[in-house]
Length: 476
Image (cartoon, rainbow, N blue to C red; front, side, top):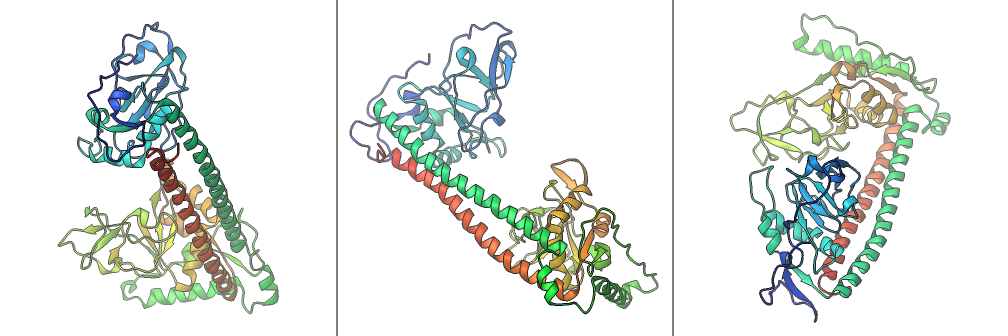
Protein backbone atom coordinates (compact mmCIF):
# COMPACT_ATOMS: atom_id res chain seq x y z
CA UNK A 1 0.00 0.00 0.00
CA UNK A 2 1.21 3.49 -0.77
CA UNK A 3 2.49 5.44 2.21
CA UNK A 4 0.52 8.52 3.25
CA UNK A 5 2.42 11.82 3.25
CA UNK A 6 2.31 13.64 6.57
CA UNK A 7 0.22 16.81 6.64
CA UNK A 8 2.12 20.09 7.15
CA UNK A 9 -0.81 22.32 8.17
CA UNK A 10 -3.63 24.06 6.34
CA UNK A 11 -3.05 24.75 2.67
CA UNK A 12 -4.40 27.91 1.06
CA UNK A 13 -6.07 27.28 -2.30
CA UNK A 14 -7.24 29.38 -5.25
CA UNK A 15 -10.83 29.76 -3.97
CA UNK A 16 -12.79 29.49 -0.76
CA UNK A 17 -14.23 26.07 -0.01
CA UNK A 18 -17.43 25.02 1.80
CA UNK A 19 -17.25 24.12 5.49
CA UNK A 20 -15.67 20.73 6.06
CA UNK A 21 -13.54 20.94 2.90
CA UNK A 22 -9.81 21.57 2.76
CA UNK A 23 -7.11 22.11 0.18
CA UNK A 24 -4.38 19.46 -0.01
CA UNK A 25 -1.45 18.73 -2.24
CA UNK A 26 -2.31 15.75 -4.43
CA UNK A 27 0.61 13.77 -3.07
CA UNK A 28 -0.81 14.07 0.46
CA UNK A 29 -4.08 12.36 -0.46
CA UNK A 30 -3.02 10.30 -3.49
CA UNK A 31 0.73 9.60 -3.60
CA UNK A 32 2.16 10.19 -7.06
CA UNK A 33 4.27 7.41 -8.57
CA UNK A 34 4.41 5.58 -5.22
CA UNK A 35 7.15 3.12 -4.42
CA UNK A 36 5.78 -0.37 -3.95
CA UNK A 37 7.39 -3.60 -2.85
CA UNK A 38 8.06 -6.64 -5.07
CA UNK A 39 4.97 -8.01 -6.78
CA UNK A 40 5.60 -11.63 -5.65
CA UNK A 41 4.16 -13.00 -8.90
CA UNK A 42 5.56 -16.01 -10.73
CA UNK A 43 7.61 -15.03 -13.76
CA UNK A 44 5.13 -16.66 -16.12
CA UNK A 45 2.07 -15.09 -14.46
CA UNK A 46 -0.01 -13.14 -16.98
CA UNK A 47 -0.63 -9.53 -16.02
CA UNK A 48 -2.56 -6.70 -17.66
CA UNK A 49 -0.54 -4.39 -19.87
CA UNK A 50 -1.71 -0.89 -20.81
CA UNK A 51 0.06 0.92 -23.67
CA UNK A 52 -0.77 4.58 -24.22
CA UNK A 53 -3.09 3.63 -27.09
CA UNK A 54 -5.28 1.65 -24.65
CA UNK A 55 -6.48 4.84 -22.95
CA UNK A 56 -9.10 6.80 -24.85
CA UNK A 57 -8.77 10.59 -24.95
CA UNK A 58 -11.25 12.64 -22.89
CA UNK A 59 -13.56 9.74 -21.97
CA UNK A 60 -11.69 7.85 -19.25
CA UNK A 61 -12.20 4.57 -21.13
CA UNK A 62 -9.37 2.08 -20.80
CA UNK A 63 -8.65 -1.31 -22.36
CA UNK A 64 -6.88 -3.67 -19.94
CA UNK A 65 -7.34 -6.83 -22.02
CA UNK A 66 -3.73 -7.11 -23.23
CA UNK A 67 -1.67 -9.64 -21.28
CA UNK A 68 2.07 -10.09 -20.86
CA UNK A 69 4.18 -12.25 -18.60
CA UNK A 70 5.25 -10.67 -15.32
CA UNK A 71 8.91 -11.28 -16.11
CA UNK A 72 8.68 -9.30 -19.37
CA UNK A 73 7.28 -6.13 -17.80
CA UNK A 74 8.82 -5.87 -14.33
CA UNK A 75 11.62 -3.70 -15.67
CA UNK A 76 11.22 -0.77 -18.03
CA UNK A 77 7.49 -0.22 -17.52
CA UNK A 78 5.18 1.59 -15.11
CA UNK A 79 3.46 -0.45 -12.42
CA UNK A 80 -0.02 0.37 -11.11
CA UNK A 81 -2.75 -1.26 -9.05
CA UNK A 82 -6.51 -1.63 -9.28
CA UNK A 83 -8.09 1.67 -8.23
CA UNK A 84 -5.12 3.83 -9.21
CA UNK A 85 -5.54 6.79 -11.57
CA UNK A 86 -3.13 7.00 -14.49
CA UNK A 87 -2.39 10.37 -16.11
CA UNK A 88 -0.53 10.70 -19.43
CA UNK A 89 2.46 12.94 -18.88
CA UNK A 90 3.83 13.37 -22.42
CA UNK A 91 2.65 15.71 -25.16
CA UNK A 92 0.23 15.46 -26.96
CA UNK A 93 -1.37 12.63 -24.96
CA UNK A 94 -1.68 14.76 -21.84
CA UNK A 95 -3.31 17.65 -23.69
CA UNK A 96 -5.68 15.18 -25.35
CA UNK A 97 -6.93 14.00 -21.96
CA UNK A 98 -5.60 10.46 -21.64
CA UNK A 99 -6.58 9.86 -18.02
CA UNK A 100 -8.26 6.78 -16.54
CA UNK A 101 -9.10 4.86 -13.39
CA UNK A 102 -7.55 1.40 -13.33
CA UNK A 103 -10.35 -1.20 -13.00
CA UNK A 104 -10.08 -4.52 -11.19
CA UNK A 105 -7.12 -6.48 -12.57
CA UNK A 106 -5.91 -10.06 -12.33
CA UNK A 107 -3.56 -10.22 -9.32
CA UNK A 108 -4.61 -6.66 -8.50
CA UNK A 109 -1.72 -5.09 -10.43
CA UNK A 110 -0.74 -4.25 -13.99
CA UNK A 111 1.97 -2.56 -16.00
CA UNK A 112 2.02 -0.05 -18.82
CA UNK A 113 3.72 2.78 -20.65
CA UNK A 114 6.38 4.73 -18.79
CA UNK A 115 4.61 7.89 -20.04
CA UNK A 116 1.95 7.59 -17.34
CA UNK A 117 2.01 9.21 -13.92
CA UNK A 118 0.38 6.92 -11.34
CA UNK A 119 -1.79 8.42 -8.58
CA UNK A 120 -2.71 6.08 -5.71
CA UNK A 121 -5.85 7.40 -3.94
CA UNK A 122 -5.85 7.28 -0.14
CA UNK A 123 -8.05 10.09 1.18
CA UNK A 124 -9.93 10.70 -2.04
CA UNK A 125 -11.90 8.24 -4.14
CA UNK A 126 -10.46 7.20 -7.48
CA UNK A 127 -13.41 8.65 -9.39
CA UNK A 128 -13.24 11.96 -7.53
CA UNK A 129 -9.51 12.20 -8.25
CA UNK A 130 -10.06 11.26 -11.90
CA UNK A 131 -12.60 14.01 -12.40
CA UNK A 132 -10.27 16.57 -10.78
CA UNK A 133 -7.18 15.83 -12.88
CA UNK A 134 -9.16 15.31 -16.10
CA UNK A 135 -10.49 18.88 -16.00
CA UNK A 136 -9.37 20.98 -18.93
CA UNK A 137 -8.18 23.70 -16.56
CA UNK A 138 -5.95 21.27 -14.68
CA UNK A 139 -4.49 19.97 -17.94
CA UNK A 140 -3.88 23.49 -19.25
CA UNK A 141 -1.91 24.31 -16.09
CA UNK A 142 -0.01 21.03 -16.48
CA UNK A 143 0.79 21.96 -20.08
CA UNK A 144 2.16 25.32 -18.96
CA UNK A 145 4.45 23.53 -16.50
CA UNK A 146 5.78 20.93 -18.95
CA UNK A 147 9.52 20.56 -19.38
CA UNK A 148 11.62 19.16 -22.21
CA UNK A 149 11.97 19.79 -25.93
CA UNK A 150 9.19 20.08 -28.51
CA UNK A 151 7.54 16.72 -29.16
CA UNK A 152 9.05 15.26 -25.98
CA UNK A 153 7.65 17.61 -23.35
CA UNK A 154 6.43 16.02 -20.13
CA UNK A 155 4.54 16.98 -16.98
CA UNK A 156 7.08 16.84 -14.13
CA UNK A 157 6.40 14.57 -11.18
CA UNK A 158 6.82 17.50 -8.79
CA UNK A 159 4.04 19.39 -10.53
CA UNK A 160 1.66 16.48 -9.97
CA UNK A 161 2.75 16.05 -6.35
CA UNK A 162 2.47 19.72 -5.44
CA UNK A 163 -0.74 20.52 -7.32
CA UNK A 164 -3.70 21.24 -5.07
CA UNK A 165 -7.01 19.41 -4.85
CA UNK A 166 -10.12 20.34 -2.82
CA UNK A 167 -10.87 17.52 -0.37
CA UNK A 168 -14.30 17.12 1.26
CA UNK A 169 -15.31 14.20 3.49
CA UNK A 170 -15.63 10.82 1.76
CA UNK A 171 -19.48 10.80 1.79
CA UNK A 172 -19.44 14.22 0.10
CA UNK A 173 -16.94 12.97 -2.50
CA UNK A 174 -19.22 10.04 -3.26
CA UNK A 175 -22.24 12.33 -3.60
CA UNK A 176 -20.30 14.65 -5.93
CA UNK A 177 -19.16 11.75 -8.13
CA UNK A 178 -22.69 10.37 -8.29
CA UNK A 179 -24.05 13.76 -9.34
CA UNK A 180 -21.32 14.24 -11.96
CA UNK A 181 -22.06 10.76 -13.33
CA UNK A 182 -25.75 11.60 -13.49
CA UNK A 183 -25.25 14.90 -15.31
CA UNK A 184 -22.63 13.44 -17.64
CA UNK A 185 -25.05 10.63 -18.55
CA UNK A 186 -27.59 13.26 -19.58
CA UNK A 187 -24.92 15.03 -21.65
CA UNK A 188 -23.96 11.66 -23.19
CA UNK A 189 -27.56 11.16 -24.28
CA UNK A 190 -27.55 14.58 -25.90
CA UNK A 191 -24.24 13.91 -27.65
CA UNK A 192 -25.54 10.55 -28.91
CA UNK A 193 -28.54 12.35 -30.38
CA UNK A 194 -26.21 14.87 -32.02
CA UNK A 195 -24.09 12.03 -33.44
CA UNK A 196 -27.20 10.41 -34.91
CA UNK A 197 -28.21 13.74 -36.42
CA UNK A 198 -24.75 14.15 -37.97
CA UNK A 199 -24.91 10.60 -39.36
CA UNK A 200 -28.38 11.23 -40.76
CA UNK A 201 -27.16 14.47 -42.33
CA UNK A 202 -24.19 12.70 -43.93
CA UNK A 203 -26.44 9.89 -45.22
CA UNK A 204 -28.87 12.42 -46.67
CA UNK A 205 -25.99 14.27 -48.33
CA UNK A 206 -24.66 11.11 -49.95
CA UNK A 207 -28.12 10.14 -51.18
CA UNK A 208 -28.65 13.62 -52.62
CA UNK A 209 -25.34 13.57 -54.50
CA UNK A 210 -26.01 10.06 -55.79
CA UNK A 211 -29.41 11.18 -57.09
CA UNK A 212 -27.83 14.27 -58.64
CA UNK A 213 -25.12 12.50 -60.64
CA UNK A 214 -27.43 9.73 -61.88
CA UNK A 215 -30.23 12.04 -63.01
CA UNK A 216 -32.76 10.93 -60.38
CA UNK A 217 -32.78 14.35 -58.70
CA UNK A 218 -34.01 16.13 -61.84
CA UNK A 219 -36.26 13.42 -63.30
CA UNK A 220 -39.41 15.54 -62.90
CA UNK A 221 -37.67 18.71 -64.09
CA UNK A 222 -36.37 16.84 -67.14
CA UNK A 223 -39.85 15.60 -68.00
CA UNK A 224 -41.24 19.13 -67.77
CA UNK A 225 -38.36 20.78 -69.64
CA UNK A 226 -37.46 18.82 -72.79
CA UNK A 227 -33.86 19.55 -73.77
CA UNK A 228 -32.92 21.04 -77.11
CA UNK A 229 -29.52 19.33 -76.88
CA UNK A 230 -28.09 16.17 -75.34
CA UNK A 231 -25.10 15.53 -73.18
CA UNK A 232 -23.33 14.24 -76.29
CA UNK A 233 -24.05 17.55 -78.05
CA UNK A 234 -22.60 19.46 -75.12
CA UNK A 235 -19.57 17.16 -75.07
CA UNK A 236 -18.92 17.87 -78.75
CA UNK A 237 -19.10 21.62 -78.19
CA UNK A 238 -16.77 21.34 -75.18
CA UNK A 239 -14.20 19.47 -77.27
CA UNK A 240 -14.40 22.02 -80.11
CA UNK A 241 -13.98 24.91 -77.70
CA UNK A 242 -11.15 23.08 -75.94
CA UNK A 243 -9.21 22.69 -79.18
CA UNK A 244 -9.78 26.32 -80.13
CA UNK A 245 -8.37 27.50 -76.79
CA UNK A 246 -5.38 25.19 -77.21
CA UNK A 247 -4.63 26.44 -80.71
CA UNK A 248 -5.01 30.08 -79.61
CA UNK A 249 -2.32 29.59 -76.96
CA UNK A 250 0.99 30.80 -78.46
CA UNK A 251 2.87 28.32 -76.27
CA UNK A 252 1.42 25.53 -78.43
CA UNK A 253 2.67 26.96 -81.72
CA UNK A 254 4.24 24.19 -83.81
CA UNK A 255 2.81 21.45 -81.58
CA UNK A 256 0.29 18.79 -82.59
CA UNK A 257 -3.05 18.79 -80.82
CA UNK A 258 -3.97 15.43 -79.26
CA UNK A 259 -7.59 14.59 -78.64
CA UNK A 260 -8.18 13.50 -75.02
CA UNK A 261 -9.16 9.89 -74.46
CA UNK A 262 -12.85 9.11 -74.02
CA UNK A 263 -14.19 7.58 -70.82
CA UNK A 264 -14.15 3.83 -70.30
CA UNK A 265 -17.87 3.15 -69.74
CA UNK A 266 -17.91 -0.51 -68.69
CA UNK A 267 -19.50 -1.00 -65.28
CA UNK A 268 -20.66 2.60 -64.85
CA UNK A 269 -24.02 3.56 -63.30
CA UNK A 270 -27.07 3.98 -65.52
CA UNK A 271 -27.75 7.60 -66.51
CA UNK A 272 -30.61 9.18 -68.52
CA UNK A 273 -30.65 8.58 -72.28
CA UNK A 274 -29.89 12.21 -73.09
CA UNK A 275 -26.85 12.30 -70.79
CA UNK A 276 -23.36 11.19 -71.82
CA UNK A 277 -20.31 9.73 -70.14
CA UNK A 278 -17.13 11.73 -70.78
CA UNK A 279 -13.67 11.56 -69.30
CA UNK A 280 -12.37 14.27 -67.00
CA UNK A 281 -9.64 14.79 -69.59
CA UNK A 282 -12.23 15.78 -72.19
CA UNK A 283 -13.43 18.57 -69.91
CA UNK A 284 -9.99 19.77 -68.86
CA UNK A 285 -7.74 22.30 -70.50
CA UNK A 286 -4.92 21.22 -68.20
CA UNK A 287 -3.97 20.15 -64.69
CA UNK A 288 -1.56 22.38 -62.81
CA UNK A 289 0.67 21.50 -59.85
CA UNK A 290 2.71 23.99 -57.89
CA UNK A 291 5.73 24.39 -55.67
CA UNK A 292 7.56 22.21 -53.19
CA UNK A 293 9.74 24.61 -51.23
CA UNK A 294 10.62 25.23 -47.59
CA UNK A 295 8.29 27.73 -45.95
CA UNK A 296 7.62 29.46 -42.65
CA UNK A 297 4.95 27.47 -40.82
CA UNK A 298 2.28 30.16 -40.56
CA UNK A 299 -0.27 31.72 -42.93
CA UNK A 300 0.97 34.75 -44.88
CA UNK A 301 0.18 38.30 -43.82
CA UNK A 302 -0.37 41.40 -45.99
CA UNK A 303 2.40 41.74 -48.56
CA UNK A 304 3.49 38.10 -48.23
CA UNK A 305 2.81 35.07 -50.42
CA UNK A 306 1.73 31.71 -49.08
CA UNK A 307 1.72 28.11 -50.21
CA UNK A 308 -1.31 25.87 -49.79
CA UNK A 309 -1.24 22.89 -47.44
CA UNK A 310 -3.18 19.70 -48.19
CA UNK A 311 -5.55 20.63 -45.39
CA UNK A 312 -6.69 23.67 -47.40
CA UNK A 313 -8.91 21.30 -49.38
CA UNK A 314 -9.25 18.38 -46.98
CA UNK A 315 -12.80 18.90 -45.77
CA UNK A 316 -14.45 19.72 -49.11
CA UNK A 317 -14.40 23.43 -48.39
CA UNK A 318 -11.51 25.74 -49.16
CA UNK A 319 -9.60 27.01 -46.11
CA UNK A 320 -7.09 29.72 -46.94
CA UNK A 321 -5.69 29.69 -43.40
CA UNK A 322 -4.31 26.20 -44.07
CA UNK A 323 -1.24 27.69 -45.69
CA UNK A 324 2.37 28.57 -44.96
CA UNK A 325 4.52 31.54 -45.94
CA UNK A 326 7.15 31.57 -48.66
CA UNK A 327 10.56 32.86 -47.59
CA UNK A 328 11.62 36.38 -48.52
CA UNK A 329 13.31 36.61 -51.88
CA UNK A 330 11.57 33.56 -53.36
CA UNK A 331 10.49 34.05 -56.97
CA UNK A 332 6.72 33.60 -57.29
CA UNK A 333 5.60 32.25 -60.69
CA UNK A 334 2.38 34.16 -61.33
CA UNK A 335 0.72 31.24 -63.11
CA UNK A 336 0.59 29.30 -59.84
CA UNK A 337 -1.35 31.95 -57.94
CA UNK A 338 -4.86 30.75 -57.09
CA UNK A 339 -8.04 32.77 -57.57
CA UNK A 340 -11.70 32.66 -56.56
CA UNK A 341 -13.53 30.00 -58.55
CA UNK A 342 -10.54 27.68 -58.96
CA UNK A 343 -11.26 23.96 -58.61
CA UNK A 344 -8.55 22.40 -56.44
CA UNK A 345 -7.90 18.74 -55.61
CA UNK A 346 -5.65 17.09 -53.03
CA UNK A 347 -3.14 14.86 -54.80
CA UNK A 348 -2.04 13.00 -51.66
CA UNK A 349 -3.84 12.20 -48.41
CA UNK A 350 -5.46 9.35 -46.52
CA UNK A 351 -7.62 6.94 -48.52
CA UNK A 352 -10.80 8.72 -47.40
CA UNK A 353 -9.51 12.18 -48.36
CA UNK A 354 -7.20 11.71 -51.35
CA UNK A 355 -8.69 13.48 -54.36
CA UNK A 356 -10.87 15.70 -52.17
CA UNK A 357 -12.04 18.71 -54.22
CA UNK A 358 -12.72 22.28 -53.12
CA UNK A 359 -13.81 25.46 -54.87
CA UNK A 360 -11.82 28.58 -53.91
CA UNK A 361 -14.16 31.15 -52.38
CA UNK A 362 -13.73 34.40 -50.45
CA UNK A 363 -9.98 34.48 -51.05
CA UNK A 364 -8.21 37.26 -49.15
CA UNK A 365 -4.61 35.97 -49.04
CA UNK A 366 -2.05 35.79 -51.82
CA UNK A 367 -1.61 32.02 -52.18
CA UNK A 368 0.05 29.63 -54.59
CA UNK A 369 -0.43 26.00 -55.50
CA UNK A 370 1.76 23.43 -53.79
CA UNK A 371 2.93 20.18 -55.33
CA UNK A 372 0.26 18.26 -53.40
CA UNK A 373 -2.67 20.48 -54.40
CA UNK A 374 -3.69 20.37 -58.05
CA UNK A 375 -5.76 22.87 -60.01
CA UNK A 376 -8.19 21.49 -62.60
CA UNK A 377 -8.47 24.08 -65.38
CA UNK A 378 -11.78 23.85 -67.29
CA UNK A 379 -14.65 26.17 -68.30
CA UNK A 380 -16.09 27.88 -65.23
CA UNK A 381 -19.63 26.49 -65.71
CA UNK A 382 -18.29 22.92 -65.43
CA UNK A 383 -16.22 23.31 -62.26
CA UNK A 384 -18.93 23.06 -59.65
CA UNK A 385 -20.56 20.14 -61.48
CA UNK A 386 -17.26 18.25 -61.49
CA UNK A 387 -16.81 19.19 -57.82
CA UNK A 388 -20.16 17.58 -56.94
CA UNK A 389 -19.41 14.48 -59.04
CA UNK A 390 -16.08 14.04 -57.25
CA UNK A 391 -17.85 14.34 -53.88
CA UNK A 392 -20.58 11.86 -54.78
CA UNK A 393 -20.48 8.20 -53.66
CA UNK A 394 -19.67 7.23 -57.25
CA UNK A 395 -16.84 9.78 -57.45
CA UNK A 396 -15.33 8.82 -54.11
CA UNK A 397 -15.44 5.10 -54.91
CA UNK A 398 -13.74 5.71 -58.26
CA UNK A 399 -11.01 7.93 -56.81
CA UNK A 400 -10.27 5.60 -53.91
CA UNK A 401 -10.09 2.55 -56.17
CA UNK A 402 -7.66 4.33 -58.52
CA UNK A 403 -5.42 5.80 -55.83
CA UNK A 404 -2.01 4.24 -55.25
CA UNK A 405 0.27 3.73 -52.27
CA UNK A 406 1.20 1.00 -49.83
CA UNK A 407 -0.41 2.61 -46.78
CA UNK A 408 -4.00 3.72 -46.23
CA UNK A 409 -2.62 6.69 -44.29
CA UNK A 410 -1.02 8.17 -47.42
CA UNK A 411 -2.43 7.55 -50.87
CA UNK A 412 -1.87 9.35 -54.16
CA UNK A 413 -4.05 10.04 -57.17
CA UNK A 414 -2.11 10.66 -60.37
CA UNK A 415 -2.92 13.27 -62.99
CA UNK A 416 -3.45 10.48 -65.54
CA UNK A 417 -5.97 8.81 -63.23
CA UNK A 418 -7.83 12.10 -62.80
CA UNK A 419 -7.95 12.60 -66.56
CA UNK A 420 -9.40 9.09 -66.99
CA UNK A 421 -12.13 9.59 -64.37
CA UNK A 422 -15.60 9.16 -65.94
CA UNK A 423 -17.92 12.16 -65.53
CA UNK A 424 -21.67 11.98 -66.28
CA UNK A 425 -22.60 14.95 -68.47
CA UNK A 426 -26.21 16.16 -68.69
CA UNK A 427 -27.45 18.74 -71.21
CA UNK A 428 -26.26 22.22 -70.22
CA UNK A 429 -29.65 23.51 -69.04
CA UNK A 430 -30.13 20.49 -66.78
CA UNK A 431 -26.54 20.76 -65.57
CA UNK A 432 -27.23 24.35 -64.50
CA UNK A 433 -30.45 23.26 -62.77
CA UNK A 434 -28.69 20.49 -60.80
CA UNK A 435 -25.83 22.77 -59.77
CA UNK A 436 -28.31 25.41 -58.57
CA UNK A 437 -30.20 22.81 -56.52
CA UNK A 438 -27.00 21.41 -55.01
CA UNK A 439 -25.64 24.88 -54.23
CA UNK A 440 -28.83 25.67 -52.34
CA UNK A 441 -28.94 22.41 -50.42
CA UNK A 442 -25.18 22.60 -49.74
CA UNK A 443 -25.64 25.96 -48.05
CA UNK A 444 -28.42 24.52 -45.88
CA UNK A 445 -26.32 21.43 -45.17
CA UNK A 446 -23.38 23.55 -44.01
CA UNK A 447 -25.61 25.69 -41.78
CA UNK A 448 -27.10 22.58 -40.19
CA UNK A 449 -23.67 20.95 -39.77
CA UNK A 450 -22.37 24.16 -38.17
CA UNK A 451 -25.31 24.23 -35.76
CA UNK A 452 -24.67 20.61 -34.79
CA UNK A 453 -21.00 21.42 -34.30
CA UNK A 454 -21.87 24.35 -32.07
CA UNK A 455 -24.14 22.14 -29.99
CA UNK A 456 -21.41 19.49 -29.75
CA UNK A 457 -18.88 22.09 -28.60
CA UNK A 458 -21.46 23.29 -26.12
CA UNK A 459 -21.72 19.79 -24.69
CA UNK A 460 -17.95 19.72 -24.09
CA UNK A 461 -18.10 23.13 -22.43
CA UNK A 462 -21.04 21.97 -20.32
CA UNK A 463 -18.98 19.06 -18.97
CA UNK A 464 -16.29 21.48 -17.86
CA UNK A 465 -18.91 23.71 -16.21
CA UNK A 466 -20.28 20.71 -14.32
CA UNK A 467 -16.80 19.84 -13.05
CA UNK A 468 -16.08 23.45 -12.05
CA UNK A 469 -19.34 23.58 -10.06
CA UNK A 470 -18.62 20.20 -8.47
CA UNK A 471 -15.25 21.24 -7.08
CA UNK A 472 -16.63 24.47 -5.67
CA UNK A 473 -19.13 22.48 -3.67
CA UNK A 474 -22.11 23.55 -5.76
CA UNK A 475 -23.29 20.02 -6.70
CA UNK A 476 -23.12 18.21 -3.37
